[in-house]
Length: 514
Image 1 (tube, rainbow, N blue to C red):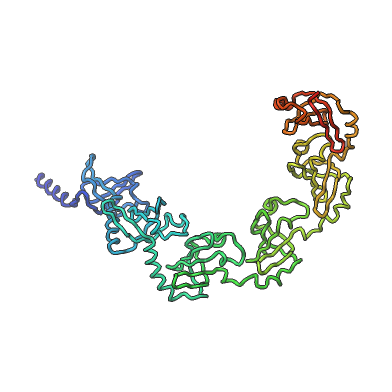
Image 2 (cartoon, one colour):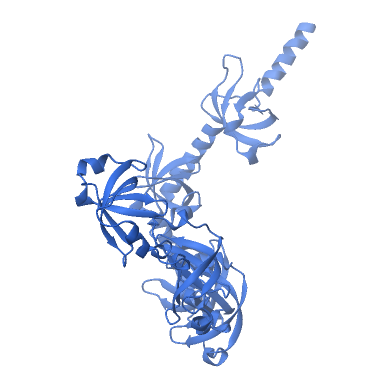
């Protein structure tokens, strides 16, 4: 009796097991999800174990039914071997063959740019899209790769399971249908809704629902812009005006600014020269700052119109985007759509009183603001700047670098050498604070005087030496042996003879030929 019951149970169990063959695609249900594996029940005597990497995130759900390829009915562990990826490839390939025969367009995503074209993922099958069939001319790679596009399958290789695609033919088919619909509806002057599809340096392509229209950069805004990305971004939904239609070529020109009135129409009555106006800094360039006076109206404050007294090398050090500034209108050019503005004209020109305030020979105090190779800039108490040239720093020393003598922000007393209000220049001097010592130097060092000197530097035109703590002279290149000069270095001692004292030029000429 027990044997009969056991036989019946085995028979019922065997009947419950599906007839499954290797190499076929079967339905299965996810019954368990582990860290690295997924358990699948396909109605066989054992459950299949499949690597979790073969599943997409949306497919990983207990109870979900999917298709699987039977690789083996029994592996070394006695379990059925299944593959989700192979099932998808087989099913995808079957569809691809059918779509190719029927001429149906397929959706794919270019995943890599290669020599001669793009690799495209179509339902898990790798396809090749030649550049000649891509229809991607003028479109940036960032707007192509990993984005869905429609393609037509133009060639199928059953042995390699590879396909060749054409975006050009798919686009032609899509556009032809869309063109037929849109040409019946769109009119010049009408407003259409579209999506920004691609952005180039000269404009943006707008998808109007099957036909691409060009929104040129000059038709984006009444104010000047440097790049279309300042106005639109890929994916933006915008309403545009149809400016022109060319049914034969299938081109549509679009406008965005035409939806708003031209703010430059009555500009000359709004902003008269000499008037004061407030605005917001919207752009900063090396040559000046652009100020938005109202939507679509910008004016330029040139660097020369920022300050009467300061040297403006970088406006970004003084201004930031978003700053509110009060300016004076200098000029309005309606035809060129330009407004010139000024900040300094709001203040009195301090150079008008510079000559009377800083008479030549007077002593003034100031603060070192900066350096050049040939001098140091000094800020005076009126915010005017003067410059100490290296030749006016010492009566006797040769100053190679102003920073060797002065420091930034250092307060010093200087003498006014000259004032040129017209060219906005004030020459200052340090040495002029002391009497000229060269008459005394000429007496102290008569011609043919032999001295022990210390080498300061060696140049192509001679050797500079220190005669005294505050006095340097030059050994002319023709007054010293070349080999001797080449072996000298700062700090070396050398015996020299005075052969020239130029009181006017404040120079001592020396010779090593004693």
